[in-house]
Length: 176
Image (cartoon, rainbow, N blue to C red; front, side):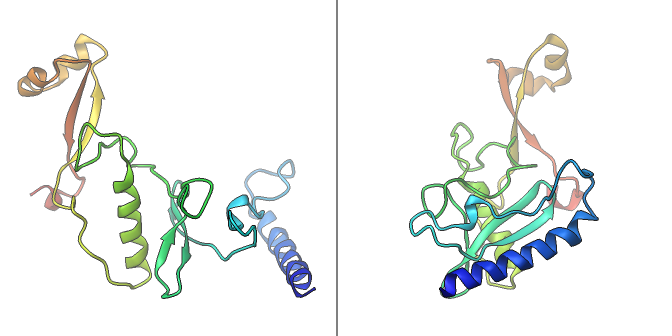
């Protein structure tokens, strides 16, 4: 019975929040609300509702997480505590794994988000194994014009239809 009362109270609070946020919605009346309870809000094993947290840097840069017993963040991760990974790769997904340029493993992005969330919560962090490595992206050589835009050294590397190119950080101090 307490669970039903909790859900009823939560439902009323959610309805009030939906009304407040409806005035801010850029979508107009055709979209009733942008706030709703998602599948992620429920534990995949027990099906009980759980407290989620979100660190959002922008609309497409975010991570959803839980807090463990010690208050440490645990990202929502497919096969571990959720049905899907719930951190964005926006702005990072085009980069290769810094520890294995030919590998397809994107766990380094999860590791980066854990560090970002821990810093935001004021928790200690450990240096990432790839912090000092260059950011490398893949460039598809789709035409002779693209090939000519590469430096002569990179043209020699581009023997296949793709080349890995180091990416420079917008802050010049980070490129030293």
